Amino acid sequence: MDNKKIVKISNIVGLVSISLLIYWVFIFISITVFGLKVFRENITESFYLSIVGILALMSGALMINIMFNLTKIAAHFDGEPVKSTGPRVKTSTWLIILSFPVIFGLLFLGNWYSSYKKEQYLVSSAKKMIHDYPAMIKELAEYRFDTNYLKKTDNIISYLEKIDKNFPAIKIIRQDTIGANTNFLCFESGMEYVKTSKTNFIYSCSSTERDYLNSVYAGSHPTPKFEANGGNYELYYPVQAGKNTIILYFAERQRYGKIGS
Image 1 (cartoon, rainbow, N blue to C red):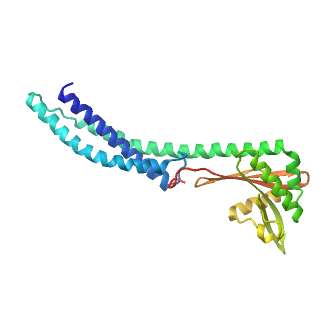
Image 2 (spheres, rainbow, N blue to C red):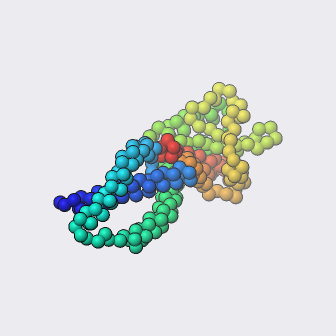
């Protein structure tokens, strides 16, 4: 292999490496700034490792510059005219520039698909629970705020969460009154049910979520509600058991790396 081929291969390797690094930094910044959830884990660790690569590429960039000059020198001694790469460079530059919005669009599409798959998983989990454990769902729906109900609910939820290690966290949301005010109470496993004060179980949520919960118990919005935010996935799944209504709440947090989470 002659010197010109070695120089050409080195130039290609260096330029491709720099281009890949630029794309990687662009992807990392995009998913961090816009909270896109595409890659599940090790994003931050991979980015820090790429910093080490930057130091190597800085040396590579200097070598590439020298190699371009060597190419011209080699062509001069061989009596060959130096070929102009102006049009090809311009075309490549435009292709690179146009590729960034395409990559950005693919990241958004990947984020949407991740949320869609998680929604399907949570909905199927809720349906499976209702189908496989109708007696337990019925017991949960027979709501009354006392120690017996809290203890029974604690035992049922603990059991349901343990039967499958991949099952999302489960909570039960129920409408109740505290004084003259209508509130929503939340019950989960590991509850402190010795002191039966309703204020200890108030479910804190946004106004949008509260409007949805109110609509469920008003009978006008029985469909499930799914939300995805910053790697947190939530599903409100209304269940009608006889004359009683409860809302199964499923929550799952997906790891995407320390910064990307």
